Length: 446
Image (cartoon, rainbow, N blue to C red; front, top):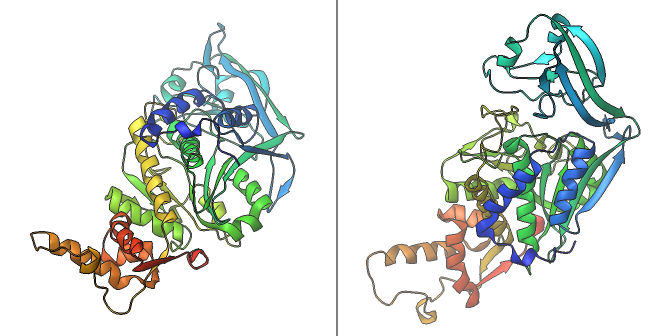
């Protein structure tokens, strides 16, 4: 796809501010697996990513072992007491309705209503996020404080929703072509209502990274961005693009939960030994330091689909607070006050480091026999002073392991330096023709 006309003005230094503004725009939209909210979100992304390619698949269509669900849309929903007061109103917060609730318009007792209410006694002022995608039911979510205040009377319960077997599931992708067809994949989901870290931080980071990469003139790899509903959307995308992805994707990442300022987290691929894993762990170790490393046994996002047996794509995830593991997860407390421009900027910077590392991840080989004569090329200090020995040792260590068997990540790990520091040593060696860089992408898929 072509870059947007104004992408050349994109500044990586202000990515966090831009992302926060996008989050504020997108936060009120009621999204689900399907429906108008998903299309409205894709409209917004397309305005900022001209060339975004949109797709749809009909409800009922089989995809692998699954089936595309009916399209769900909702207009209004409320619980009204005998005096006509709306004690719960979807218009106040779109988490108030269980996702995919079927329509209802009935009067009922409090006892009957209680079977359809969801709250969090341990968090009495938070509204939980509850869904029922694949079983027909209806329900409301509310704070436990408000639930406890309900009295014995007759309530008017209304959910004006529709479940259409003739609907569709919408998704999109955006491909930035590099010098070769090998790809780095970024996948994120657009199916949650008003939650900021768990939902919106992923799509807005994908948008920022796509704008940044579109502004670059000479990318080594191609970059694929996927915007789809979680789980079923990823399954749909894989069912339609599996051969292309398996042939071309060298590394991939799920973008989610990247907006707060808490500790970074890492979710590996299924076996944790792919290029995606190695690049992420290297960058987290050298540029973040303290981070939480999880096991694939603790997975819960779309890495489940991309790393499934038979799919086997090299997909991992770098997050801030991991889904499930922060208290606000899947509640109304996951709001715009939880994410910050600083937190989003930090995630953008880490993924920027990963991208830069992947772009420079060649296999490097010394071109002379024996130790090269560095002094005659001005690469060896003429005087000995405090600290100079360390610089020389690091340079000669890089040379010692630039034997063609190590890519940049392995070389940097071997000499215990960051990839940036290794590249600083390699640059003059490359300029002098003492070292060559070999592509070798077929050897690094993992």
